[in-house]
Amino acid sequence: MLEREKYIKILLFLLIAVFGRILLQIIPGAAPIIPMALFAGANYGLEAAVFVGAGAFALSFFLIHGEIGLGNIFHIVIAISFIVSGIFLAIKVLRIGKHGQINPQIMVFRVTIATVFIEVALSLMQGEIFRSPHSYYHLLANIVLAAIIGGIGKKEPG
Image 1 (spheres, rainbow, N blue to C red):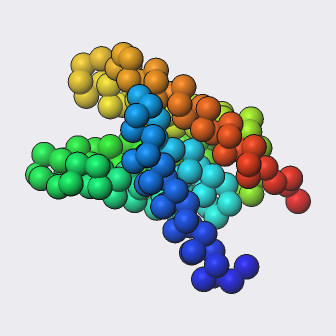
Image 2: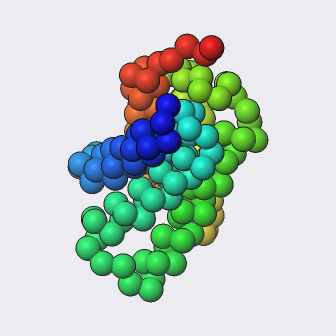
């Protein structure tokens, strides 16, 4: 695959994550950022996953809230650090599935691990273990989105 095509596809993952988060605001906790980041990572590696996850969160935050003040920048930096850590954990540390292997089970497992990590980290900053009900909605929505994305992007290893 040409490098140009690769970068265009990674940018497409980013745009789907950004506009998916914006359009799914009506569903509590539904934001396809983690599933799309991990899908990009399954196709193009850790760097693509981190770019999509961090970029989509920052860009969608700006588009939803319309401005970024100093307090928002702190929130974005903290959230992105947890997103990147969760993605790294799901892709590199656990090593579930082969690079390029995409199926609903692996997507759901990776997204569940990353989402739980992110939610626990963000909740601990607020003195809780899991923010109710937001954390539960976020986890459930990400599992459903991961199963859908994993099914659409199903690709046999080889």
